[in-house]
Amino acid sequence: MSEPTIQDWSLHSWREKDALQQPTYPDEAALEEKLDHVAALPPLVTSWEVENLKAEIARAAQGDRFLLQGGECAESFGNCRADVITGRLKILMQMSLVLTYGLNTSIVRVGRFAGQYAKPRSSDTETHDGTTLPSYRGDIINGPEFSAEARRPDPERMVEAYSSSSLTLNLVRALAEGGFADLRHPEYWDLDFMDHSPLAEEYHALVDAIGDTIDFVEAVTEQELDSLESVTFYTSHEALLLPYEEALSRSVPHKDGIYNLGTHLPWVGKRTNQVDNAHVEYARGIENPVGLKVGPDMTPSRLKTLVRTLDPEDEPGKLTLISRLGADTIGDRLPALVEAVQATGQSVLWIADPMHGNTETTDDGTKTRHFDNILGELEQALDVHAAEGSHLGGVHFELTGRDVTECIGGARGLSEADLGRAYESRVDPRLNYEQSLEMAFSIVRKYRQ
Ligand code: PEP
Ligand code: MN
Image (cartoon, rainbow, N blue to C red; front, top):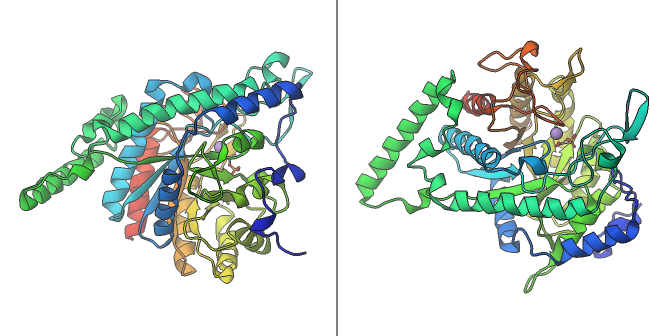
């Protein structure tokens, strides 16, 4: 079989392939109308930003940056709210502060937000009390309520997803570029419950140390450090609902190729990463950097083919491999996968998603993850890359700035009995603010070993 070349690609070529995890819309004409509507709306991001992120990822692949990707498993329209969006930014800012200081490198901040509305599901349907309905596939497709009406795929939801993405991005950009992100005022990122956290002291000591350093540098240079006032947040989501991704993919004046202008970093999920299928076909031709989830079912030879397919020209920053293997499996699987990529001679960025291989269900049917397994997978990822002469250049978390109880463990010792108290996620369990901050400190500790 000859490998596909980029020349065979068009924005529509994915339509000739098997597209898994897609809804069946009841009304084809309504679908086309809504897609035309989305395709006519302004882009959410620009090609310059996309190229900047690609350059940052290229640097992270060389060990000169560290990528922090985090946010919701699934955004919802109802949570397109100031407190949710700012809470998420606050914890990401706190984590990136800890990582910058601890790893002594610049952090590339990538949110799982402003578009993370489509979810792959393990089953097409769900049955309760003898009634079977289509599964909830994320707010961009249908509603979570268990009724035939809510579960019917509605293409108008794509327009709402676009609007919610745009509203989210508007606040993110204003905060990131304005005074909120100023390193001299890290108190702006304090979350209400911060003072009661066992980590508060460690965090505030670090903030004070950074403040002293800034004062020192400004005193010595007799200059204010302007660059401290703003940061960049890039966006990412799983490029799952292909007609929507296509509608936001555009050509750009003075540049070659097609850019996905709905997000900076689209990724291909574990359930749709087959080499011959539609999602890889879509992702291999766009100009954006792309992410690829690598799960325990990945073989070294398939990964080689995927690397060559998604990044045929070995373009710096093009490909980010996101391993999500599970704490019990990573030690067995990751070494051969890293070696397979090394054998291609291509340069990719490896990051670790220690969330998705560690999901478990409690006896009462609640989905959770153990802090220790998450950290355990992360630490093993670091060790494996180091042993293989490779490099782990980033992390990927499902997290929230809210004080939820969805994952077990961490400094406060959340137990299974606590899960009922503040469990808000409709899909996967997220680290709460305190567990997220603890994770950042733990990463630093491990890197410094
Ligand atoms: C996700 O990132 O929410 C997800 C579904 O991940 P994966 O494709 O790795 O299972
Ligand atoms: Mn998830």
